[in-house]
Amino acid sequence: MSQVASAHPATAHRVVEPTETPLTPESWGKLGMWVFLVGDAVGFGVLLASYGAMRATSADWPNPYDVLGINLTAGMTFLLICSSVTMVKALEWLSKGDRNWCRLFLLFTALGGTIFVSLQAYEWGKLIREGLHIDGNPWGAALFGTSFFLVTGFHGLHVTAGVLYLIGMIRYVTNRPDPAASYNAVEIAGLYWHFVDLVWIMVFTFMYLL
Amino acid sequence: MAGPAHRHPNYMAIFWWLAVLTVIEIAVIFAPFGKFTIGVLLVGLALGKASLVALYFMHLRFETRTLGAIAVTPLVIATLLVFLLLPDGFAVHHKTEVRKAAGHAAPAKH
Image 1 (cartoon, chains in turn red, green):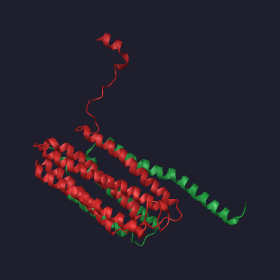
Image 2 (cartoon, rainbow over the protein chains, first blue to last red; image 1 turned 90 degrees about the vertical axis):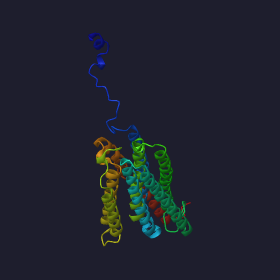
Image 3 (tube, rainbow over the protein chains, first blue to last red; image 1 turned 90 degrees about the horizontal axis):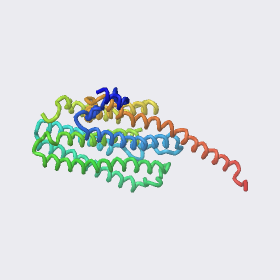
Image 4 (cartoon, rainbow over the protein chains, first blue to last red; image 1 turned 30 degrees about the vertical axis):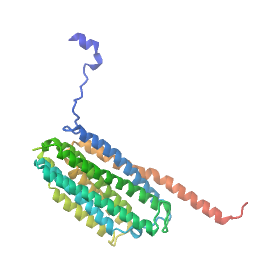
């Protein structure tokens, strides 16, 4: 006993860390997703912060409301909120042990995302025809178009990835007869989907409304 | 049974809050307020909506406080970044103006 203590005097009072993370005690995967999302949020944060700084220091920044309009995007915002609700409902059904309703609501969520991306493609096409290009536009600062396509495109890419992720989750739930076996994975997929919704709330406010 | 019951708050109530806040956001841009007031209101409403999504849909309300602190960090970084970038932007703006003024004052210097 004393021999061990004298051999490793430095470790005598050291507290051994538990193998389970205290941050998300029931799931390492959830912590992994949170770490990814925080990193991704910094990416979006940098884009929006630089957008704000560029706009504040530009002499001829167009008024986004006049160029972009908000009727369509307000509808898209509402659609994404609805898809977040169907996502939490899918998880709720799974916690009740009903895999079929869970899969149906996952499908609704993926469908919401698909419609969102389609509407965004329509909006892009309309704006491009009106003259909004990545390297210039008739209304003022060229960076207006550059930042618009960069930020909304980066977000649209996230929605597209989310739809593929959700389709993967439908398969995942289908392949596991025990609802408890897929609960954790569906909750983690939900974290990603809600994050995409959260980012859109910010993008809608900073790029369309302000 | 599969997941903890306290993890499922009243999602429909959150949905209605989000829907109402979105309508208020759109109403605010037509409100007879100053530009600055509208800006502050819009940012406040957006942060409110984002918090609802994070707290209830992403279950942050039921996670440890440390995870919440980690989740808020990107927002703090982005806010600081705006102020870090502003002087640079204004410097470029200022230089452009100076060059323009000089160009107009003495167009045929060489």
